[in-house]
Length: 490
Image (cartoon, rainbow, N blue to C red):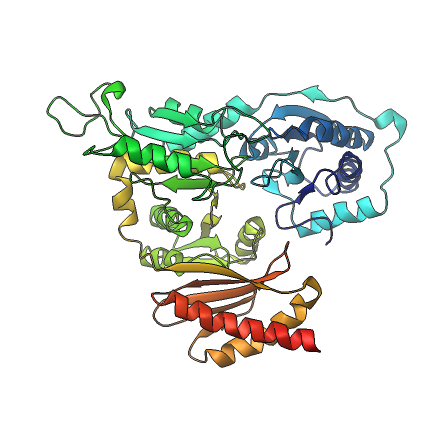
């Protein structure tokens, strides 16, 4: 498909995600819903929301016009985190205008049905109608939008769900860097309602993202990391109330607490989450994933608990899930919802998908079918309150990890990957090989590497995790560069 990428439609607002495209997509979504009305159990109503980007109102007006002229009822929800829009789309449809972690010059369109992102079949149906310029509905079927406010219901849902994990927060101090994004009205509120003492950075919604880049990385979170580290300097038990005897406890006033137990960073629409430890260091995203995956696996009553993840996710996830009695299934990037559906379609009576995640992004399956950074924040906070972040991380083996990019023209990627399906196994004959989503090699010492083409840039990506990661990356990179050169010379 040309229109949809791994996370909906996304790009610059001046040349790709324009109001004219939004109008066409709205009309196409309306036509697709009407055409499938007889076979769908979902209400044809569409809830429409946007993140805080300055281009959101214009795009919302355009897509609303397309939806209304397409003959479907529209419920305007205003500014929302993406997981809140997904929650509001349960039993109906949803459209979210967001470019997630992209810069303010970009925007995007994500489509939902019954709390789950559109699968490839539905995306193709929309794309074909955009290409064919789907007609408007008869004039007397056009609709007028109404206003809804689903944020409170979503926050209550997250609060109730998270209460089933860990311990009461009881004044636990947490620093949250909202990045001027849509986590600002969500994560701090939920954590405070659960009992935490929260300090926010960049806690106002501003579509220019003046505080930092929208993508939460170790570099863009430098202020959060320094803020947490400085606050914790010399503090024996940071972030926890101190009782009269000088130990950790829940009886003291939260104002007496020093430092922060941990920090949280979000992206522009609050589906991603980054965890910062008490020393101000970013906890590796796969370690966070492994901690949650193990917890969900151990908590499951199913005989066959399954965690769905992606090919670039660390082997540490499989280690923790297997130790807890479960198994891991991998699916292409951006398709966690499809992976969940595939496992369920083939599942035996004793099989249950308990968690699904790719680095930075988590689907709490028992809560809903959408990626939810706010729910992750609430669940992790309660686990930290119960055990401490260091204890949660302790069972996870963290090997050195690297990701590099090898230049490759877009039109050569298919040929290069065809060559690598043979060349990489030949170069590493002792490895187990999986070619479902790129070429993934796994070794007996738990090292692994993945080679896959970028879906958005002229690169082939190399991921690797190993105690000798530099040597492994160098060897794999050499094979990839040879394949690219051989393809370009043809």
